[in-house]
Length: 297
Image (cartoon, rainbow, N blue to C red; front, top):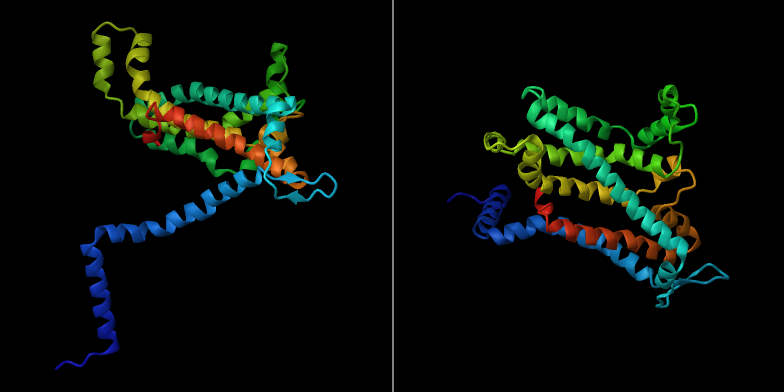
């Protein structure tokens, strides 16, 4: 008889465990998903739950200590204070403006990279589009601060036409955010255009459709899910941004700035303000779901 050594016994246990997992695919899948689902539930959903709960607390006006008593005063203040309403509407408007600008700029660029450029150059063009994402966020924003500052590159280029740069403010914020998040719009639009059958464009031309009619009736309906998928990134990233507006926004205030400024002074109010982008993004995702955008992510 062959002697059973600890190494042999260990290999037998491993083989039995592997055989058991092979016969039970659901158990194998559960073990693979346990760690990421636990991380999602505890760190992400747990933090959102804490945020939502703390939004119903209040702050003692004398000691500035958080009072853990249920109250809806923070949300009532959000709805009744004109400043808060203006900042919320302005933040949503900036996010929508950035999304529209990204879509307008991204479509011709993506059309060139996906349909016009030679196939051997397309991977290099995609890499060129991704290159700005590798640079530091702060470096890019401060570069735009130098461009938009008085006497900067924008003023120098527009001066021969009798114009001046936008300076710091809301237009500068939209412009900078558009530059920051533009690659997130180009990539899904490029993918959608790359998957567009060329025969459809030829068939549309053979049937006598002009370029604008072909774009409106053939290209746009098939590319719209890609545009919507890119808008999920541009809208959500712009809505939650607060650093760019501090650097190039001048006196402009967005909801991220209010959250940041209230963290030390009034934590429950900061939490109530923080729930607004979450609710808006959830509603936006539900709207984009109807376009098929989520399946294009």
